[in-house]
Length: 400
Image (tube, rainbow, N blue to C red; front, side, top):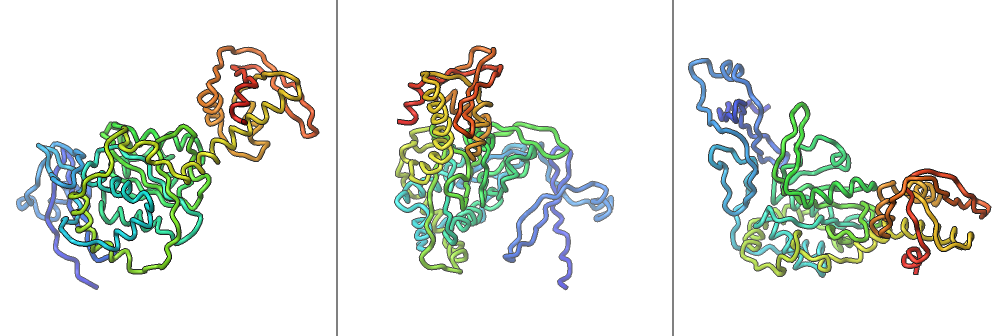
């Protein structure tokens, strides 16, 4: 067994809290610096009361991302954003270029712009990048690992459950939040990621600590084997960039190591390269630039299937009753959607009726909802609530 190395003796004080700086060994053989909360009593036990090591003192932590002119200290604050371990230099990067051409295809220039903005303009809001493919061995996970290799501790892997937890201190202050095997099929999940992607400030919370507000600049890169419904994307949503990735033609088991060696050359290229796009929206790219068949496929599955089912149901009721309008609440159509074998929550149905169809519920009173029975008969059901009036004209616009 290798003997324990001598204590590095590096300690810092942030406010009134003492930390020890340690080098945590990695599987690769490298080390990563960690800050471990320490105690003055342990320090005295290790060194003796009269032989304490020098301790650097700071008023607090700050989080300022910068890959070009990185500063560890800003005034009396220690920067928690980690420096990258690569020094950009001129050179060729054939393996990285070929891999990115595989990921971004005909949108290669947009992909390079995205990575360039990540590196040189870290606080710029960017679209939520989602890579999908039902096939295996496509390189989706390799792309996430490639980003992790570049940005190190400033990128973190999340699970689907992490977005639903109230505790977010381990990812809310990172540059990149990476998710493999994405499956978030509730509208509230989509709303959370959408809102985070354009949030300037965010409340960070850790177990046993008070919530505090931070400047939020994280970007989301997601991967999924589900091409139809990895996440709910409404028809009008413009914050997602979805790309379908094909399987690699020839597997290269050494690709990760080859790309790792080329990263300094690739970063030099990003620094020197002229962007192919201009800043034309709050997320830099325009919706038209991000439009892909893969995005339309998810929108069609998530929105149109439910929307068409509601519209078809309303038209069937009107035709059977010989009327040109009917009334109902989102909760009424929740049962309709469930009986049709589809999945949707009340908020998604409400968004369709109120946002997509521009309907309003002003009255809270008794109304009659009509239910189509298994035998085809239409049965009136007395209800009370804030009902919406749906006309034949509205339904026809959806179905025609």
